[in-house]
Image 1 (cartoon, rainbow, N blue to C red):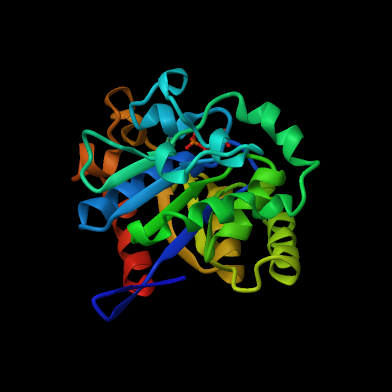
Image 2: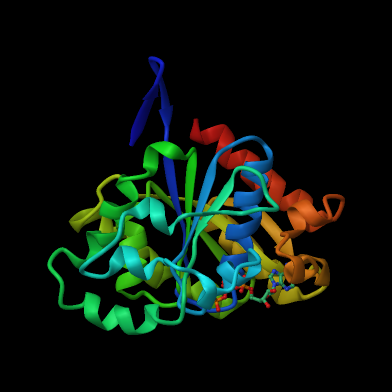
Length: 263
Ligand SMILES: Nc1ncnc2c1ncn2[C@@H]1O[C@H](COP(=O)(O)OP(=O)(O)OP(=O)(O)O)[C@@H](O)[C@H]1O
């Protein structure tokens, strides 16, 4: 995982943002953390591994207009990884491997392949040295795509809504991560949980937040707020669009925690 530049070893960190539950703000967290790191001068690559392509669209790209997407990395006759990387015009230091709806169909094809959970990892190796961080936005299932992300990453960050069912869903995710650790990627660990869509005035949210904090390392708590999505039409995450909001500050703080502990 190391790259050597003029004799100095720099750790390259690949991070999976994962939770098999939908709507827990995986995509929003990926874009904001990646943009915050890029703003701090890190070279960051985001990988959209969800066929809904929300990250791709949030970044201001049209999935159907892309010549190459993450599908081209995963299919049998894959293309060179660098061809699938697009630099974002409006955010310095930030690039993306976009997704497209075709990824849903490709998932079926992946099931029949040898070492099917290591396909993404092999492709990312080609370009890993070009980035300080690679952040993978996982789909909302424990599918072969999520397994590919877990096999390719150094650690996982789990966004979890502060409600009971989301809290309970973490058990299943942790079991999957343990399996991946035993069978495919011994180096994987969970960096922490981001408690998301938190509402201070909801009693249950406070109880779940306490329960989460007892069991997991909370690296940030993001409140439910309309501010979070305001830049989505012009391809800007709130962390850059409206830096003074609480949500932007929280994402910046999470990015700083990761960078401080990363290298
Ligand atoms: N802090 C927030 N407050 C309110 N809404 C938010 C916040 N963060 C994200 N959202 C909105 O919540 C919805 C779900 O967010 P997002 O798409 O990031 O979740 P996800 O976990 O990636 O979803 P999926 O599992 O479907 O891919 C989106 O409409 C997003 O704009």
